[in-house]
Amino acid sequence: MDLAQVATELLAPLGFEVLELKISDSSRNRRLLLRIDRLDEQAVSIEDVATVSEVFGLELDRLDPIARAYQLEVESPGPERPLKRIRHFERFHDLLAKVRVGEETFRGIIREVSGEMIAFDVGNTRKMVRLADIESAQLAEWPTEPR
Image (cartoon, rainbow, N blue to C red):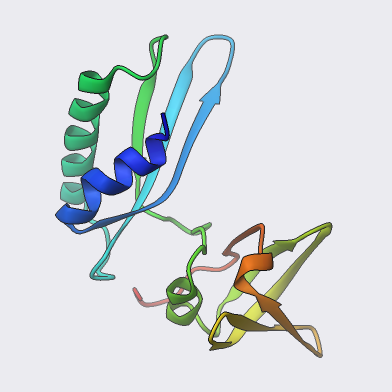
């Protein structure tokens, strides 16, 4: 069962985007981390986190997809916000991002988005990367004002 898809289908009509869903397993605890954002691009509030936690928690109880006990944690994007869609790069232009493409990881300032191409300033070099080639990307700095 694709829990990220379940979360997306459940939460999108409520105005939330699923940025990340991770299950981490330690010898003592299993943790299900759900990182969300608002589709209207407003800041995620404590009330939003509580709503998503309740709604998604009830759906997990109904589906019972995880055999062992687990702890559900719902978070706002935070300072290491994942960047997955073109809109994310547009929204956070002029900020520093950490990007992995194949074997290469670099830190660069998001300068321009054109179609599926994203331009990063890495030192004195302009680096163009296709969204489809990005394995992972996240903000490496947090904006001074909400975006």
